Length: 188
Image (cartoon, rainbow, N blue to C red):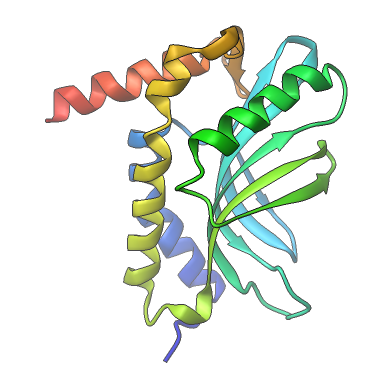
């Protein structure tokens, strides 16, 4: 029997996955919810480009259902102005380097603009219990973190001056990647 997703279940799952997300990817920068999604994310900005990309984990509605019908992670890459050429380089980077991670790619549109959504979602009905959802998300987080060495290699210098989109506004994505690796080495 599929797991029943209610508010208290969602909150319990977020509490369970937050330490893993923080340890493997970095601190959350935002929490968003609507009738179509409920997620936590780590967003990045660059100079005048504002939002360039983000990593999100949560629950999503992709049908006409009244309830969330998918759970998982995505990488959102904004593709529209300014500097669409650089933005396309981020989309190409994530498409190529996460091709074994995401299950589908689609366009998205939001208050942040338009872009590409690299989705690693499963239907909630595929899970029998909350623990299976947590395990799927943990595996997704761990697999996404494997792109961090590639970010550190900084192809075409596209990750220069890319900052975490939250106060104190000085953590670069390269700093976050290095901190994650340093912390994981200390914990090994």
